[in-house]
Each structure stands twice: as structure tokens, then as C-alpha cells.
Length: 250
Ligand SMILES: Cc1cc2nc3c(=O)[nH]c(=O)nc-3n(C[C@H](O)[C@H](O)[C@H](O)COP(=O)(O)O)c2cc1C
Image (cartoon, rainbow, N blue to C red; front, side):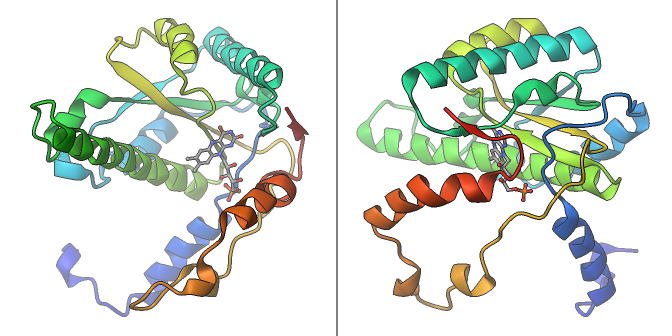
């Protein structure tokens, strides 16, 4: 069927979509004995391929990791980063990243910030150019995120639990990880997508109500949080809504 022929009242299609959207839930430990068929990787990345992107630049690369020793080496990069954070007393709730090593599905998502040149920039080094470049990087990140989300939803539609992992974007961590996968230097690893049958039943996490996030015509001042409220949320609320499973604060 031609896209334009889809009726606006396609409620059944909406419900089918929402069934996947609602039931996409983060899992951080998987049944390590499960083998993801190659076809599933292709189905999942086929969804990513159709994502929209700024200037239709499609600035993404997906590296499917199937070798167990590679997964373990990458997991160790996360553990090192976790130790580093603990030393820095960052106080960010940290999950158990050992689940990475046994994740049946493992896709590294990379991008190349040089693509920012494809978006509106002056490229002449001025302060104005810097402002446009800042936005160009946001366009790039949004583009890769939207493709990654499509992949997560496709994996969820196949019945997998999914795990979006960004904890390792820092330069030093990248330097350790990129050579393992032969990723050329100008590229950056933006996140890792893990998926598989969950080791324990996934649970639905807290989501804000529609009325808390939607504004009509004007931003609702009641939605604005003060600095103190945000600090309070970080101090007392964040860890409770992030994890009900293996969380420790470091
Ligand atoms: C951009 C982004 C970055 C994330 N980074 C991490 C991460 O580094 N480690 C992690 O364990 N979970 C990470 N997550 C997963 C979130 O913690 C999770 O989506 C959130 O707690 C809501 O739970 P839900 O996915 O079950 O709705 C990330 C999710 C997104 C979208």
C-alpha cells in the first residue's frame, strides 16, 4: 500500500505500534545462551535504515558484535569507566555492566562528527560559525538517536528486552574501545545497543503523565522546575526511577 493511502483513522495500526512502544523496556541482564539469528540483526537494522536524519545525511554506522571475547573486552572498558567514576565520586547510580558480556544481541552505534558539516554551518571559524556548529552537532546526535530508537523498537517487536548504553562516550574510553572494533579515529562510538531474552522479567519504569509534559500554544509555567527542584530530584528521585534492579551509587 502506498504511504499516502494510509487513512488518518488507522487506529489499529496505532495500537499495534503502541503495543511495541509501551512494551519496550530496558533489561540489563539477558539469557546468555540465546543465539540471535543473523536475520534478526538484519530486521532490526532495517528499521534503523529508514530513520529520518538531518539533510538525510544518515550519519550512522552499526557494528554487530557476535564474538564473545570482543563483548567481554568492551564490557571491561565499562568496568574501568565505572571504577574511574567511583574514584571521581560522581555519585551517579551505576548498573551492573557485566550484563554486556553475555548480551546475545550487541550492536555498537557510531557516528562521524565530520558530518556536522552537512548541516547549516559557515565553516569559517567565527563565533557565529561556532553557534551553528553547536546546533549541527545536535542535529547529528538527534539523527543517530532516532535511528537507534527505530532499532530498539524493532528489537522490542521481536520480543527482546533492550538496553541502551551510552556510559562510555568519553575520549579516553573511546580510545580504549575503538581499536578493538577497528573503528577509524574520526568516528565516535555514541552508544551500544544490547538485546536478548531478559534474564528476569522486565518491569515498566515510571513515566511522566502526558499532562506533565505537554503544553498547548504556550509553555505551561507549572512545568518549569527551579534549579533547586532539579537538584532535589537528582539527590532523592533519580536513582529510584532509574533502577529497581542491581543499582549501586558510585
Ligand atoms: C540516550 C540514553 C542513554 C542511556 N544510557 C544508559 C547507560 O549508559 N546505561 C544504562 O544502564 N542505561 C542507559 N539508558 C537506559 C535508561 O536508563 C532507561 O531507558 C530509562 O531508565 C527508562 O527505562 P525504560 O527504557 O525501561 O523505559 C539510556 C537510555 C537512553 C535513551
